[in-house]
Length: 207
Ligand SMILES: *[C@@H]1O[C@H](CO)[C@@H](O)[C@H](O)[C@H]1NC(C)=O
Ligand SMILES: *[C@@H]1O[C@H](CO)[C@@H](O)[C@H](O)[C@H]1NC(C)=O
Image 1 (cartoon, rainbow, N blue to C red):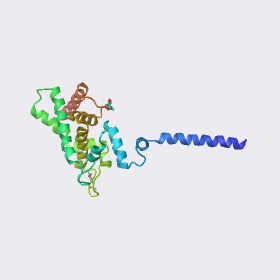
Image 2: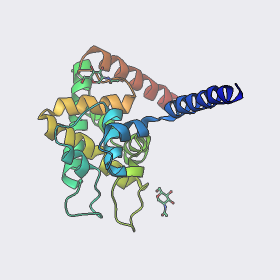
Image 3: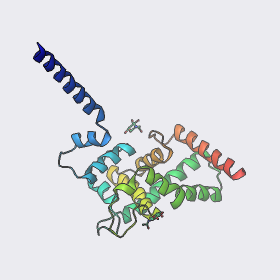
Image 4: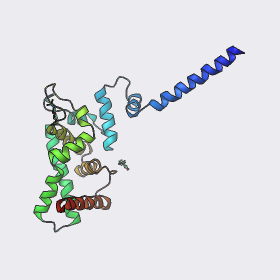
């Protein structure tokens, strides 16, 4: 009798233990289970990053390259990051002009430079994605330096443009990451978010 009670008790403890293990599975463990068991931390980080930006690469090598600083290897994110800047600028110009075709060149340039500011906008977005924790750099390079984070951040959108063959897809993915909103095609919703942002900018300028 006592041994039976003991068996039941043991089973209960095991069941509880198993249940807690399941609860303890976090995002990264989930990736680990889904990805190849042999996947390296960098590969897992690439998986997670795709979830965060809501884009799945056909050619994951492009994202791998985007997350590689020139200090790390010859095969790096420098050129992708130039394309990324242009993707971002094009997208911002498109929504600004769609909203107001009479926008002054000065205002348009201001909006563009606002969004690509290294310290406040670009590096901040990149840190939020955790790029400083995954970008591959030489041991001497500082992973949290704004230029490193920014280069990787911009390269993501260059990589998406090459992968999808569409720079406006890449632009809307940028916008989704930048605003923290779900990804949208160019129209209405994006414009509303954009207007809100401009108003906050204006309020800030007035204060
Ligand atoms: C790395 O860069 C960040 C941001 O510029 C800076 O705050 C930090 O002190 C730097 N770390 C080193 C070790 O230079
Ligand atoms: C992710 O992208 C898909 C289209 O590829 C879209 O339907 C979905 O709403 C997006 N989700 C988020 C959270 O952005």
